[in-house]
Amino acid sequence: MSDPKTPRKRTPARPVKAAKKTTSAASGARRTAAKSTARKAPARKTPAKKRAANPAGTRTRTMPVPVSGGAVATEPTSAPPPHASFGDELLKVDHLVKYFPVMRGIVFKKQIGTVQAVDDVSFSIRQGETLGVVGESGCGKSTTARTILRLIEPTGGAVYFNGQDLVKFNREQLRLLRREMQIIFQDPFASLNPRMTVRSIVGEPLMIHGIYESSGGPRYVEDLLARVGLNPEHGNRYPHEFSGGQRQRIGVARALALKPKLIICDEPVSALDVSVQAQILNLLEDLQNEFGLTYMFIAHDLSVVRHISDRVSVMYLGKVVETADRDTLYEKPMHPYTQALISAVPVPDPEKERNRKRIILEGDLPSPLNPPPACRFHTRCWKAQEICREVEPPLEDRGNGHMVACHFAEEVKVL
Image (cartoon, rainbow, N blue to C red; front, side):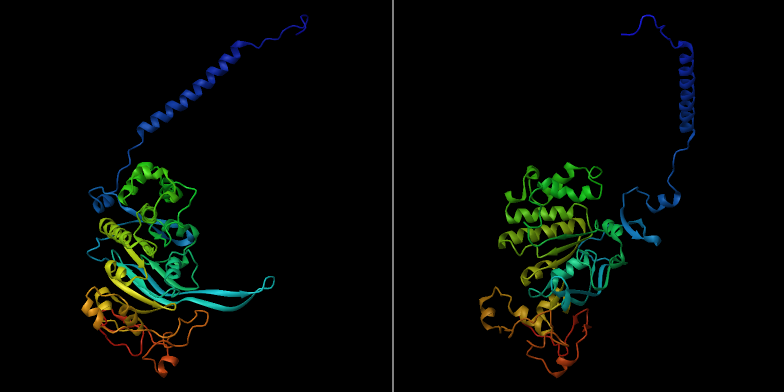
């Protein structure tokens, strides 16, 4: 309690009220000035050049373009052409190299060798096209795909996407460019996070790039699931609750979320049953025709590659040995390794199957740690001569875009 003898001090009320009035009057004047300025500000108008370039007011996609100083600018790009007519060159791989060092020791490590997983690989893919890549296990197909996306850093070479060298991109430029390039992994279970629901898995790319809300959020994710053949209520489940084919559909939906131009399919149907394989292949073709997608399709099954591909590249021990359009490669292969592969494809006609000659390759696949000199196939080739052991054959055009790396290439009808 306060002392009753102590006089109570009172603060005069009038000066406080006057100060409040002064403050409120000043803030009111500022608000009035801001409103009048906002009313007088002219409305922004679209420049005449932009209206002429886009008279219908249609929306265009943006593509990150590197500029000086390491920054990233954006410029509008038109949608890719339909699958029926191929457009300009979208992806170009130029002398791509990826070596893995082999180390020995625990404390003092020493390099004792190099695994030449990808060695001087070159090819190109046009917009709306599907390039199939085939070869034995260990020939470098998946390593090439991951190196193109820079999930693995390349040792040498260049990768051009829309004319831009991805190898020279910094981390931020590459992050923006990943909207245009996606991948469907081989294992439909290991590639999905078991702790996340399907809705979170499909929506994660949108969250990473900050466009989840602007793209429609949960409604957009449900539309993606419905587009790949899943029910919207599946979004609340976890990956272990689905079959292999359904999990692969989830992977397709995740790859499609950012509306990319290029999708690399790393053996997407090798772990599935034959009937489910057909469903996934038909789904990929429908999506390509609808969205104008470009595919790099990796597989072991030559029948699957022939069904979905427009052109086919054959790899052997880290190198491309032959590239041609689908019909030419299957009907008139020129490289001995390609001829041996196609001779193993079953023919539905029993009479032709009994009469055709099967080419059996002798010997084992050499190790990429110590590949054979010159032509890497000469240790298993029935046409090999001394020049094959001394001079490496270049990948040359033998007519109509049929690229072959062989000293004794010749057309042979196998099927």
